[in-house]
Length: 231
Ligand SMILES: Nc1ncnc2c1ncn2[C@@H]1O[C@H](COP(=O)(O)OP(=O)(O)OP(=O)(O)O)[C@@H](O)[C@H]1O
Image (tube, rainbow, N blue to C red; front, side, top):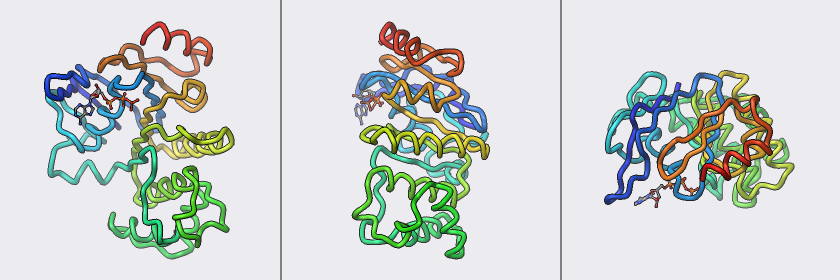
């Protein structure tokens, strides 16, 4: 679903990503770990087409990520570290607005279903987003991803700053999305959560993907050891 082939990015002589080859299958949750500056966000931004590669190619559902093309974009949703939606609009209004932008029109009942599937408590559906916590905003972001029928969701440090309960809830939603055959590529610093939620884990260092592991083959303690030995 998400494929990087010899993908590289150079910023003013700084090699941010070097020859990345990565294949994330449909229904897979892949967590990318690495220190600050390892190249995780660069990888996500290349899949989104926010930046252009210096070499190689990213593709989504077999469609090349190329500037100006919208084909690959209809398969993608993006959950940034802080989901910025319209603070003065309610959860339902934001969902309706962004679904329409993506070309979908849903009844209020369907919109409520999407928010429920994303784990938002019903009493928050009609509240303005301005007062929402980070975790609640993410849930609205996920509801938008579901509503636009995104097959792949790119997430940049989604659990940073979430309390343990919100992290647990978020992980459960990710697992449900994967069970629905959606693909997730997540940049994270949370080793425990990577083992807990991921099917596969990548460890990056200075722009290179050094290790790619099956999450069920390691414990959090083993992964932490490998991570510390790698970075
Ligand atoms: N717009 C930019 N211009 C110049 N250099 C950049 C730019 N964006 C990223 N870089 C550099 O590219 C490298 C990789 O950065 P990137 O943001 O991908 O790392 P990261 O693994 O996501 O780090 P973090 O965990 O801090 O988010 C770093 O050396 C960074 O300074």
